[in-house]
Image 1 (cartoon, helix red, strand yellow):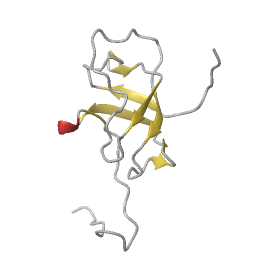
Image 2 (cartoon, helix red, strand yellow; image 1 turned 135 degrees about the vertical axis):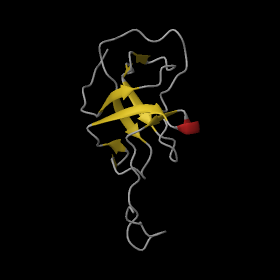
Image 3 (spheres, helix red, strand yellow; image 1 turned 135 degrees about the horizontal axis):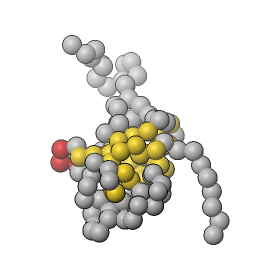
Image 4 (cartoon, one colour; image 1 turned 90 degrees about the vertical axis):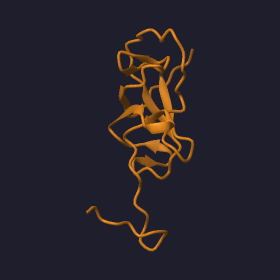
Length: 114
């Protein structure tokens, strides 16, 4: 089998206990994909039991489909690491997602925090 090694952000923590890749709050998939273009969901989420065995590896973020995230550069995540967890009704989500500020004059103006 041919193998490649690439640098990618690590999934530092996953609190989605019902995911097949979650063992002791760590994701053991080789890599995950974040987002459906609108919501920062974990597209790799797989609800199954029993959980995957502890492979000793931690998942990386292979791709991010949310161009609206400030960590996204050409559909790749630039954060040091991410956290995955439950976010309301959207299920397993990237909790590290941060909305990118709109350029001045586009859409609604960005309001400074109160």
